Length: 398
Ligand SMILES: *Cc1c(COP(=O)(O)O)cnc(C)c1O
Image 1 (cartoon, rainbow, N blue to C red):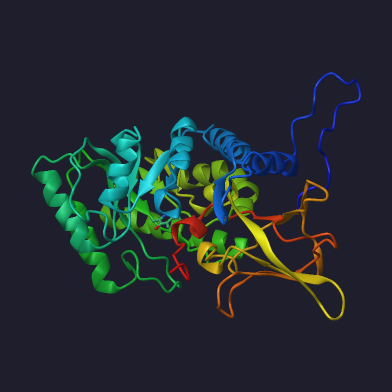
Image 2 (cartoon, rainbow, N blue to C red; image 1 turned 120 degrees about the vertical axis):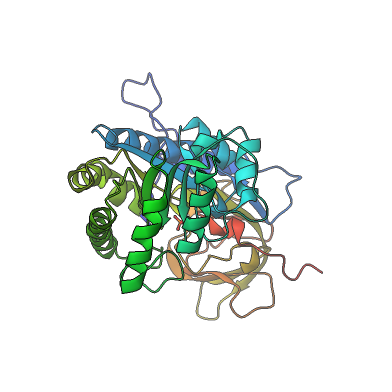
């Protein structure tokens, strides 16, 4: 994560007319302050309205810039990452699509007013638990040959299913349980036959996903390049033009806005040279969109001086409410009653210990905790809007 610039609260331009737009850290402080209330019970997962709006607006404008060529570029927000209604509403107001992995997610999106033609359906168990009746979806990417054959039968029977029906391909060289491994000799032949059976009125698409565990940006791009060559070969083998290319999610928030989005237009231009009937490039960001939008507010239960100087604090949140705490950096702020102001924690000799009786329940290590920190002070663990929410579990609560 990039570190936030220091103090810009109440900065004004020299002429004194207009306040400068808030910087990220000032916006974040205002968002956090908005949740402080004497009746607030902690730990509490809170939505950061201004921070979220700013991040999504930035992504939206980058998507528009990437769509300047002949190929449309769209993002489909991955609902499973965090199905918070505010995020689904942001997807709609930002003119983004949503990506669902189950019929329950599809139902949820439809209930919140998202039209079926804005839903991309993906993943292995996407028809579970039972099919939601609705108009044709934007795109369906089949995870196996068996599923492709089934969907193809539905289409031939007059069921419109989706405007684009395609396949998920397993990127070569990655260990994955998902998608079709076309490098297996017999698999390619079967896929060619299955695609041949697909009615011509439906667009054909290909999807792949580079998992977040591939953290090196250059490795991610090299997989994308390899997949583009593989999709071109698949198009030649099937004779079926690829109209929709979905490169999945797996990009963190900084990499999304600094690495992927600025180069997406160029990727679309490159893709259409080898896939001349390509109409759209899709991305499926989950963490990249959701992570900065929520924080965990927690309070100090105990202050423990360290023998060598400095101090640790015990807080009322636990790793069960922040299950991703060790997987990616979380900017953490402390608001002491003395200053009444959120300060970003820098490096120092202290730890933030979770309330539960688990060795691994440590929310931050090596942070500088102010000398005036006291019981009842607030700690805000930011960047907790993605899988910290959707994978949280109840633990140690009786
Ligand atoms: C989970 C998932 C995503 C989102 O992944 P992030 O790592 O949150 O960006 C996108 N597409 C598919 C098919 C997924 O299963």
